[in-house]
Length: 437
Image (cartoon, rainbow, N blue to C red):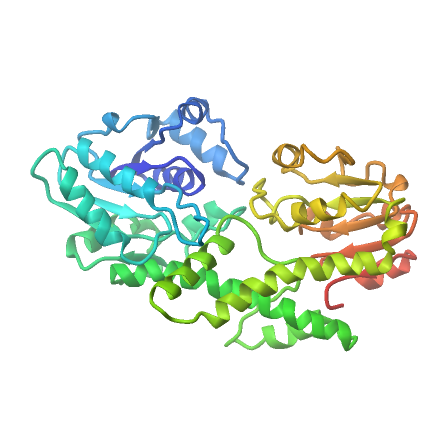
């Protein structure tokens, strides 16, 4: 068992803390947000993530998980520190690492023994070296501190499984002590296969950006291809199956849709583009990926405007399913759905909105829009709506009750995620308009 301190009780920090306890470690999680810490003491999770609340409750009950608002509470037995604070984007696309730097200072001033500091926050190349120097400058005693890069690869909505069943565990270090410690911490995850990959700190930092940017590139490629498929009357899903069966390409992230959103892909692509600029290298692919993603919403909006003339839209009530940027989360950061709502709200009579968990966050974000109504379920008032727009691929939208949907006045579905069976929709007299199909 290791005594571990996690800095940051946000999405990554809280999942990391709860899962490390599940692996048999004693974990203290520090966050300077006093209200958040107060709630976490009661196992109140500030965001929606499947299975996380149960793990937090279990850790608290067993006295293996604790929360603190102060670095002064760092245990004298703590030998591993994991920095999981936010790295928000700045206006020029670069990454703000001030919270990481402040965390390093807080650790250095209160650390009690020789330790290892893992940087799990997504940070630009070179941050590992910077944090090492900050810690050395602020140490209150003569201690030996190793700093290593340890990027996270957690998907919102499936983060617990990603942690407990990882594809890989990336550690950026040259230290044999860090390597030994990493194997001890993650021993139970490596029983069948050693999933730890040791690389240089700089390579580990860049790997995180490379992974997210590559996945975003696959999404934008399929979205751009869907425009051609539309013009040629080809179903993009047939293309997806055709190329996805090639093991060199793989079947994941090939679904055409409204584009990517969330807190990671947009931010990480901007940060990587900024890194190219700082090194005087043109990032033609990434710039195009970003542009295609931005264009996808415009293209989908055009489908709606072309079907309904702008004049007709003024009298229409449209039903929208899905507000979060992806299913199984209440995260609305960079949500394409909310961007669409902002654009459509000025051109329609009313929008009726439904999401299984993201309504509270969306209500605050959309508070200045007057012609929207939030629904209690996906079929509420459907007979008063003219058409349906699907923006998030929640599981309960995948196989809907078409008898209810056929009550739409104009009997048309705009499927922004290509999740419905268009042939089945047609059987119920519904017109189906997807992306590239």
